[in-house]
Length: 512
Ligand code: HEM
Image (tube, rainbow, N blue to C red; front, side):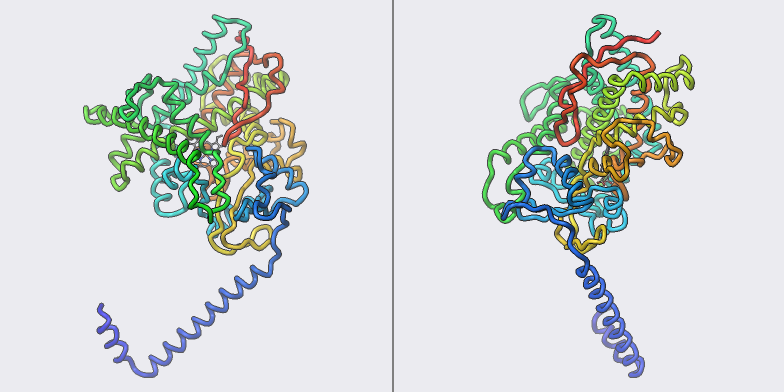
């Protein structure tokens, strides 16, 4: 309908109708205005959250020098309470340290806090939010989340990938038995074996096949499987915590910071070059008529609107996410069990009673409450993703009864929530029994805050549970675990996730 038609229709209306409609619109306008200003006025009457004192200009930056801010945040929570604000250079950051305020931010106030705030390093490494986990909550996010759930992480997709998990479990068991046979009484580096097998699973889910090596045209060299792992996983996870001082002073962004930029750009270039080479191989396979049920085959045939770069990033996302946090969880669980023979024996007995001499399978998991408790207690105490990737309040809002102005960064300190003394008895102790309490639903994956919450809760929690629980079950069913002398004290962590700094070394004795 054209503007002229509209004007004609309007002029043709009886005068009284026009006046009545005009009056109604005015009334509506004033009502809405009153409602909005009341809402904003109401919000700004709320007090601001407690402030952690810092220095002029740099705020609290010096107090966060070590790369484990979640521990400093948790210490501050004991003084300032579950919610407080800090200054990181030019930005205000609201830190949330209890499940109540964290859930309020992730669920009740989600519509005001749904955008991500990424560091310069993460912007480059994620191709400016081109991943499910780092994207803002928008149409792109909804589309790619549908893809990842449909083909990789949803319950039906996980059923289709079951054979890869079965192979992985057998391989790990065989490699450990072979090691113990050839070097009895010598401590085994569990991470080396588990990490390698998990990476194989990640490649099969994403690309359909594991790889031994690949020629990378853009690097003019062939890379071994270990080198591919380093380029795709280890290096990028290290780069993700790289600090660029311009993150804290956006008004100085025009000053170049060549050293950080070059390092991150180089990592990103190498990662893309390897992904390109891996994808080229699989495109050849598809062209030859060999189809496999995996993410690349699905994306290339179903996701026609995605660009080539977006497809690289989505495939890489599955590889890196599969390879990291599940390893962190399983290694910490085995460390705790190897340190604690009584609890290890309790788990062994449970498995013995339920499975007899048959190997633990995914079908057994719902009958093994103590195994599930071991998994959740490890997630609680060692929170693999200790801080949720930063969010950002894009409009004025409130949290915990405090006023949160638009522009504040929001940090959900998962580690702080999972070790909050008000919620957890003796939080520093690893006590799986706490999850046997009848108030917990044994199959609930969100007993702790480890997987986040609300619409952006972890999409891979089912996969993590299936892999980690059955691995722990099989490992305890087949071997008696004991830490190598001096291992107990090795509790330090490094990286974006809570990787054990020193890989766990344990002495294994095959069970009869
Ligand atoms: C024990 C293992 C894991 C832990 C502790 C963990 C933890 C988390 C956390 C805290 C978030 C952020 C939630 C938020 O922003 O509110 C997240 C998001 C996500 N995780 Fe995991 N994760 C694990 C394993 C996995 C695995 C194995 C995958 C996939 C292979 C995966 C894929 C994702 C994805 C795609 C998202 C983004 C969801 C969205 O934004 O909608 N995670 N995870």
